[in-house]
Image (cartoon, rainbow, N blue to C red; front, top):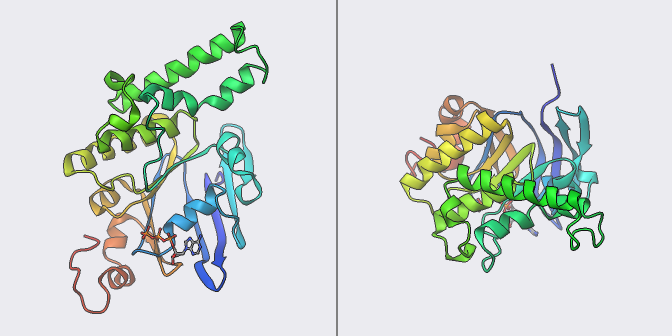
Length: 273
Ligand SMILES: Nc1ncnc2c1ncn2[C@@H]1O[C@H](COP(=O)(O)OP(=O)(O)OP(=O)(O)O)[C@@H](O)[C@H]1O
């Protein structure tokens, strides 16, 4: 059997005396949506920050295997820009981080800056319109238009990103991440602030990215209609520890998960339903 797309082994992250992640191991597969869920403060975003180079884990090994080349990368040893560029891990953030004053299209071209710099030979070739640079620039625009089309934003390509409605900005962030050509797409609460119709559209978009594009998706999400509706596999964290993993049906029925979400007093009925 081939190696998993992502293998997290014994991940531990301490901040001074606080252990935010405590010996967590799990895998994420290509062409699968893996959700990481858990109550507030469980350590979900810290896992993402370790995977994407924002934090260097205190302990643990994070292996990303690109099946098209057979190469494996130890993410904890790579600089953050190499994690995106070489290992192919892209992410979106809990709080939207777009260039608000730039157009929608420009936001997607900035994401491809690195490819364009390589094509320019890191010199003036870009400015003088060298053919290889012009070809790379055309490709970057085509790629951007492809993802704008897939995210339903093509008609808004020339509008400032900051003027888009909230749900459109969330989809633009995903389009921007996809323009980097990721093997693994990490989404931090992509459904936050979306209405039910927008959440349903997000589900369709993520399933398309999984099925048509073949990326693996790692998803942090509190909206259980998204998590239970589209996840292939769910990992549950509580107080920095993994307390369960399995299919949506298994997670819904898991007593430890129900206890973590409901607390002892059974107040939040249906939290993982
Ligand atoms: N840079 C940091 N310095 C100190 N403590 C931190 C840091 N980052 C996270 N933590 C702590 O680690 C714990 C886990 O936080 P994290 O943001 O990963 O949780 P989460 O599951 O993503 O929560 P939420 O669902 O509320 O976003 C929290 O107690 C948090 O305060």
